Image (cartoon, rainbow, N blue to C red; front, top):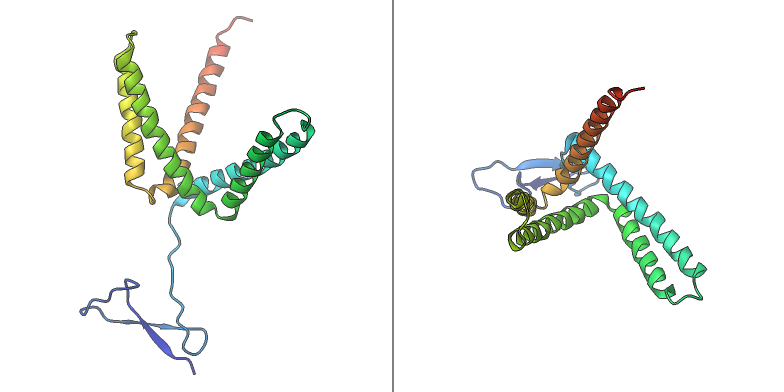
Length: 189
């Protein structure tokens, strides 16, 4: 006969006004809590696919760097190539083994990249006089704000940021191909 365990709705703190929910376990006395799968929709799938692709590219790159290190062994760059290859291989394997953690790490790295890049763009635009530097300052501000927004929403942003950025890149890439095709139609010949 199975025993029922009382599990609060919020998974931890139980309010005295809430009714306890009974969960039946698979064996006597074993309660199996239910976990919700993270919801990311198509953007979440693109994020997952992009992270896995990036992980496998790092694995392949790590293997190639390590092989290259042994091919240039007489040269003085052996240690640098070997360490770079091993690092790429290990990081790639870690990302492939746990793509969710890889997405979170890459999202945090992307947020930091945007914040630092935005600050550098602003400083460079203010330091040097060139035509249209107001647009450069505005671009730096937008980049900085994007980085802050991604960082402030982390770890939730790890589900959607990479997939959204890949989608935006594909849209702009497709649009540039359409415009190139339209311009090519107007060429004589």
